[in-house]
Image (cartoon, rainbow, N blue to C red):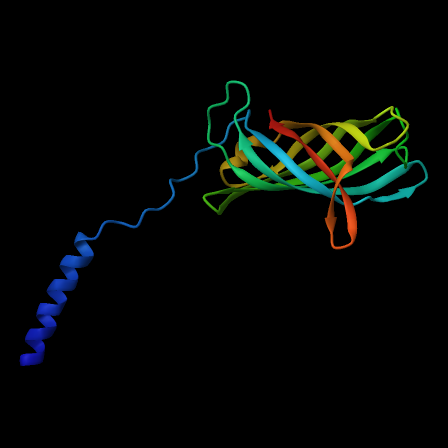
Length: 192
């Protein structure tokens, strides 16, 4: 009988504690994303691709994407990781030359408060890399048009839209992975 009384008192105390406890702070739910979101992109080339004839296939880049406001965009800002594989004409860069980007694919995995809230992916539609004329091919001005063919989570409304990446492929400012130097890439990705 004594134990039942203690259990009843303990139950009452636990009930008051649980009911009176504030809810654990959870991140706010992500908002639907509209076109206009932008990302500052900083990363590296992890594979130079392979040449067959006059086309280089699969030049692959990975990057951190940090959400930024672009123009009048006032929606939520997200961070993510971007991976892009491009195909371009002219198998090797030449000083002062332009390589036409003719295809490829891309994926942006997006996070908010450390939780993945969606993925945006698609095809590389077109673009170019214009190499520096300084007698080297150390830097290239990159311009890419991306088509959104897949999106989930809060990004579903972006399917069918486009994006642009404007930046630089830099073979001077390389980073080391072990003993290997890899070119860096940086710029801005905007979803339209």
